[in-house]
Structure formats: structure tokens, C-alpha cells
Length: 84
Image 1 (spheres, rainbow, N blue to C red):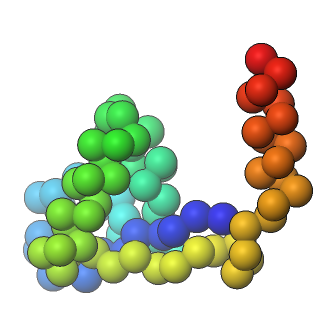
Image 2: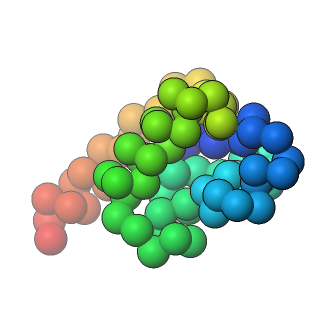
């Protein structure tokens, strides 16, 4: 369950902006994957993606992996983190 980022910028801009180049994959790329590829923290990367969306250089492609979050899975993660 993640939102995928897809570029809307012209192809000549893709090569000059690393985030746009990374997002130019089928079916798109998640913000966490962008952060990992660029070796950045997640919060600044998310802010960067929002700025690119505001400038209409990327689009956010809804949730993939289902319409609703898998609450059982999320609860297992929370329980695991609580047990650490």
C-alpha cells in the first residue's frame, strides 16, 4: 500500500532532475524508494515530492496494493514495534 509518483514533466527535464528520472519507471516509484535511491531522509524527500507536485512536474497515483489499508498487518507491525 503506497502512493506511486509518476513524472509529468517533458522528457528533456527528466535527465536533469534525479527525482523525475527515478519516477520515470513503470508503474511509478514510492517516496521511500526515492529517498533510498538518493540517500535522503524520508521527510525531506516527501517535501520535495510535494513541491514537484505543486509545480505540476509529477502526479501522485493513489494507493496501490488495495483500496483500504490492511489493518491486521498494520496492527502486527505496531505490536512488533511495541515489543522492541
